[in-house]
Length: 520
Image 1 (tube, helix red, strand yellow):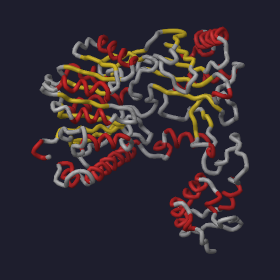
Image 2 (image 1 turned 90 degrees about the horizontal axis):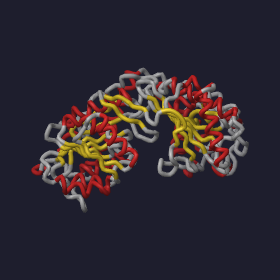
Image 3 (image 1 turned 30 degrees about the vertical axis):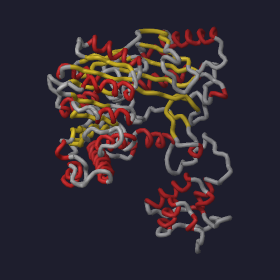
Image 4 (image 1 turned 60 degrees about the vertical axis):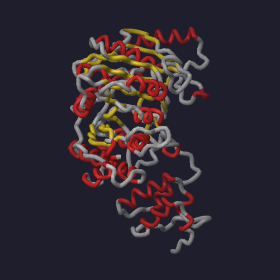
């Protein structure tokens, strides 16, 4: 059978069709209306399913695929349309802990993450080769390190690999049984995948203490006459629940509630019921230390937008990391894997080369963890953070740990840093540590770093090095342009750290040093 319209397909479809032509596939009974192309009448989901079979070089019955995925037929979330391939739980595990689900040993995971980090460094080397002269140090380093822009250490393992999460967020939505008051994690990737909420009991990275709270909370909301809030415009009230724990076993629980048209009196009554349930009722088994309630009219709200209300217990829990104590408030950022965070902070201390004369500039400092851990090794710590609550926590943490050489400034890094740089001009030794969110640093921040002559060493921490982090790396290492006139940096060492075992994520720590003037 000839298919004259294949050249009109989208590129991904052409590749799949080309592969399929080399595999024995039974097309009998499959109709090709209109453009005479099977892929034109199917969604990306169908193409993806076909690709899975092609990849395995299996004999596929497209007649069976067609009958299970007929266009126009409504999909019922209570019917597992992918039953022949994977269970709903498997779908969740493939999203949350894909390496574990694939049967990969932990040693193999570490090697896999090493190669992922190596790939990132090779991409950076190629991107820099397009903008840098061929005689720059970074180009020579790529030749010496198998195409990587700098040497790469082996992946540092997490001290614990199961139940390591100290913070878990659970959603409330329609579950596999159709019950809209199901507490769990979302499985699926869009309408075609019928996003549903699946209990997370098989996710081995979540501790049992968190799963217990989720199960008990589901019991509570299912006994409540108030409906779940699936979509804001449809009403309902139960939104999600967050559980935070520390090494000592203390638990902070934060319930997010959509007030809608509920009166203040009715909301107060519901809060009383929640307290009664968790303190004296069936929820008592959770042994909650701090119980918070947030009435939010948005998907995510800050404390300023929708205050966290303490319903019962202590206002904070405290975590210990490398002998330091840190206060955890409801929205405070703290590394998800506490033992892994200790490995991360020790690595930063080792490769940063800080001394007693160093001024440590902690950009995007959060609650001040990195600066406080390194405070005894440096002359001064200056932290910059945009979240006011985090700055308040950082100042409290400094007091808790008797740290007197730390200063924390509240504001956007792109606003604070350009004004801070002139004050550091005469500082003999400045080392910066950058741990930004996934969106990376604002170009004004990288520009201010480049324009600070006393800042000659920079440690960049990224949990998503293939994203906006790559842009930051190029801004730091590329030739002077526009307002960026300072000598560029050169990556000299990279260390992957497994902060998230069994997932595909890896924390990449990269040390940059200022390029010497004679080599520019």
